Image (tube, rainbow over all chains, first blue to last red; front, side):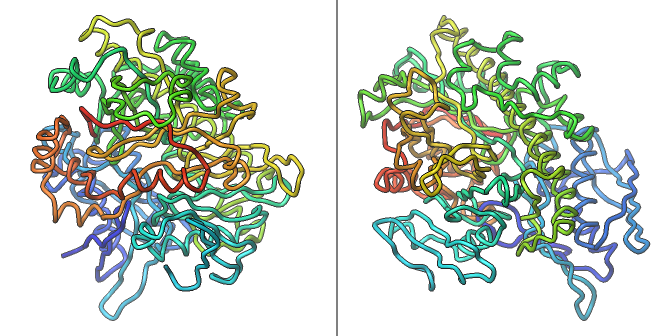
Length: 135
Length: 477
């Protein structure tokens, strides 16, 4: 499993693991979309984004915040992200489809990506992150 | 009780300096012994973290609905000196001016009870849930109006009554809004969400006044026993969420620039009067105003539904009051015997100004401000009244709700939304939502008992009980 939900009284706390930082970000992105729109998500429409941040935690929070923005304003639900990282610069192509209330209305809106307890850690087999989504 | 926490009175507790490194003042919270058994140690750490912030006055405070948040705990209140203190989005939250309002109707329970069609009409007319889009066309002029004039913009645009504004905290608009400090990203999110409820704990509820504790105050507020009311809980939607996200980033840089040490990145902050601090305050005020306009639009849509169903007029459905739960304000409080202007943060807490305050409706100046405390979809909500004691003990603040005690993941595992809805229907409560999860996530079982929480604030004296309402119909995101 690429991510798991940990107990949190009010919000959604996610723990993700992956072999690389890019895959780790992709897993958290998947968690975000699943919380908001459920598991039934397809590709077909793409969006590209580029951003830089001072550290991995900020880069992850900025990436997910931008995904929230694009998803809401363009009315898109994403199923996958191709992420490339060069130092603290991230480029991503997001694959998704238009929001369909019949398929995607079962989730919970995420209001923001919290910095509380946000830490990307190196492990023996890759990387781990704990992150809280405010809902 | 948690190790290191000291009991200072009936329902009153202190977190001493030293509980976490760098505390400048003690933490203080209000909680009964019984609710103390549900208290999370992590929430007390967050309360103590707030006490490390520069310029904090008297205490870092928490109300009895305290639980783990991000930055501040939920239920957290802290006031900061304008000269030496800071302002932080971590003390307000992503949903700026998430708040609640209540309007009354002349209807009785018998006329409304079991009316699935009424709940269905409200669900159809008021966009809810993820992806819920506005039915109101918002132009760029409208968006500016919402951010600058809040509920007044809505009333002047035909969505409400002039009298509604008298019964809103701040008259439905903060004067310091700065639309220039609101990013284009945030503004883009604002166009499509005017008049939408959102998801999570947001709701619109049809309720009946079940019990009156203080008849004279209830009469002054416009509430009588047996009366059907409508409660609306929502906030500033994507515009506010984006404003918090944008300014958190700016204030993270500012925290380093002004060499402020914070124990949690979510507590990023800047001196209140710095360029960065004032920009956040201006953008936050604009977002708060958007939230007041939003609740006003939803009120109008709900009144239209009641008007058609029962041949009422909008004037038959006056607003009792509208309060903000997540906001920072410049307010005057007594510090060391002197009236002092402070920056008061309330994160999941309600303003509860007492009699004599210049900031409450003139017609209620001898009584105090109405305070509206929502319960969960199956438990009572309460109307309380602000007190002078709140001005002394809690910077004029009280609780904001029942407070969660079960995580959403545990709720999903333990509860089925359709079972919860069926159980509520047997008790005469009709629930309408987009999904089963939206119901199980917010089931009555996941919240602390609302009656116990309000009893604490009543006993401590930071607000007093006026009336109890119970739900008849609920729409959820």
